[in-house]
Length: 125
Image 1 (cartoon, rainbow, N blue to C red):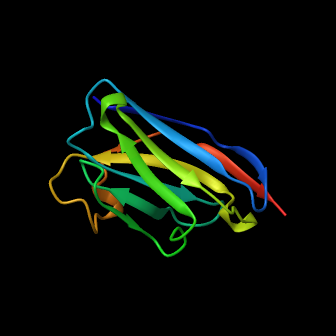
Image 2: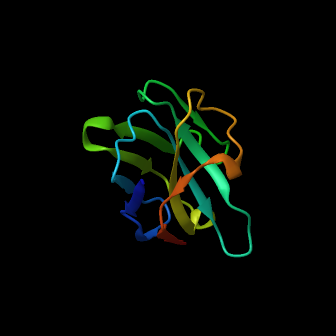
C-alpha cells in the first residue's frame, strides 16, 4: 500500500513562491506516473501537472504552464512542485497522486489510485 504525504504549503503574498513535496511511503513509486492536483472550495479538483516514471517528461495544464514545475527524485521516493509568481486564484488545497501504469498522459481523475491528504496553499493579494 502506498501512502502519499504532502508538505510545503502555507500562506504567501502574490508574486511569491512555494515548493511542495510529496513523499511516498510503503512502496517505491519509481514505476508510477505521478501528478499534482488542486481543489478550491466549491470547485472541482483540477489537474495541474503530471510526470512520467523516469521524470524525463512532464505535462502541464494551462493554469500551471510557465509558473509551476513538476519534478521527481525516485531515489528519495519524492515528488515536487515548484510554484512561482503565485496569484490569489492559486489558493486551494493541493494534492499529489500516483498510479501504476505505463502511459502517463490524459489519465482520468478516477484512474489515479493513490492520493495524499493535501496541503493548503493560500495566496493573499
